[in-house]
Image 1 (tube, rainbow, N blue to C red):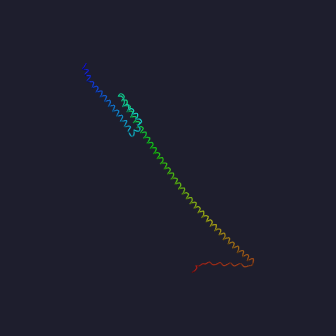
Image 2 (cartoon, helix red, strand yellow):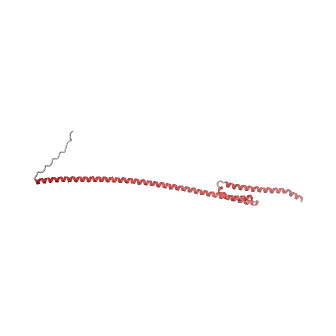
Image 3 (cartoon, helix red, strand yellow):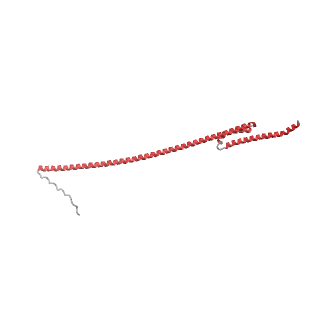
Length: 219
């Protein structure tokens, strides 16, 4: 019996050492898992693109990581898994939120471009309208100028026609006056002849008419 006890005594330190080594290995593995998850969480939080979108979700991952640090050996695998899933969920949610923000920004940029195009088109339409208005005003002014010129030409034509008509009337009047004068002279002559015949007086001799010059006057 004593040899068995002696053998057991010799094996006991080796067993304790093995258990210690095994426990130390588990502790190191647990620490390494904790450090790995902590680094992943910190890297995601420090990411300049995704960090701001992951902040709220990472609080739950930090809570799980804290549970992992304090967990018993039997619970470490569970909390490591929970922490890992929460970090992945935070990353996926941050990526989705970031893509949504990018889509929203692109939509806002597209709206700004559409607004700029609409303003440009409206400005071009106003410029075209103003150009058409100026052209219409120029055409109206030109038409008014031509109308005034035509009116002036018609007035000048009417004045010329009136002047010609007045000249014709004056000539006709002069002709009628000459005819009346000639008739009056003829009647006066006849009256004188008749009076002379009645009174027994000879007819008055006709006055000699002055001769017209036929030659060129000599110096």
